[in-house]
View 1 (cartoon, rainbow, N blue to C red):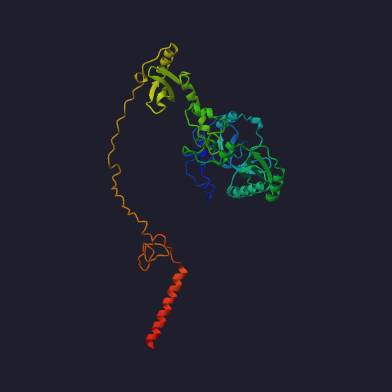
View 2: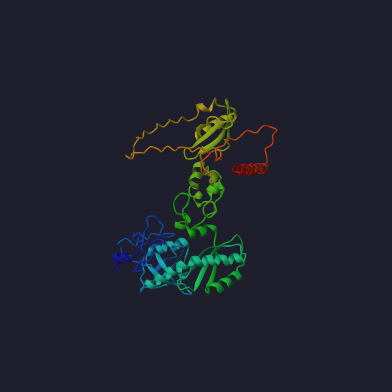
Length: 439
């Protein structure tokens, strides 16, 4: 098979929301095996050798295969009658059944990947059976759609048994012979009764695997505070311990909510620039938290590591006075003077002067769009609000418009019963008077 035919066989990648087409290929971004955003697959690997028009004199008959969109990867033998290439959907032998997966790497890059992961060639036993057809891809899509309700039901069963664990993800083989449950827990869990309940409920072989919080977030995926996809779900596979000392060296505020990732642990990216900060901090002097001058004692407020500046403020100002930026060499000079019982006159003479940046002129109309003026809103008066009991809109809640008489001090209000009795007496007198006139 020529290299051009191999590149033609590379299938397009697709997101999890894309459905397979009539020919079994997913309707993705048509980037021919490489996604610019990296969001089509977890732990992506770009096989750049497969896209080059050159023959491989020493073929390597092993392939790297990814399951469930990169959630798990393994190595398999590539028989000559299959001859799968990067991007092919294949049916692999798992030892206790078969499963559908995608070829992520082929050729010489697989050898380098095995060397990185310290996997020996003799330890690989399973092989690829054949290329996946349309029916295999339909079964694969059905199994993926059934995993979420299966995980929800599994969580309900674990809670009814009172186990302190969390089911993070479920992976079911395409032949529905085996289901792997990934869970997180603080300690050791006795899940013998749980496996019996799962086997009774799902009628499938059960396997339980305990993972950490970082591995769980890597399998689930998401967007970090930087606006990009999580490092653990895209490229990071080696999780190193992270401590708050890394944040202190980088002059970051110890804020647990900002330093923690989606897994609840400290962000892995705190270690990415730590070596650069440690190398830059070697030029800073030690024991210079306080400097003595004739104007008073100066206290270190903050440091700028890469600009090699140290900001001081006089102790008498209590942090509210002027900050004096001193270069590291100046701080070393003052430290040597203090050791010889000498003091400079003032930090203002040794501080670095920064030229004020001129404001950049901006045109008034950058977009060329006419801006409409803001609408003036009339504030409603509190007394103008109508109530349900006062539909007429009278402010004093007096529908007849009668004036209220002021009550004098010491006079008690007449009770309502007396008013009612007086009203009845007046009505009777009117009736009697009317009858007298008629007579």
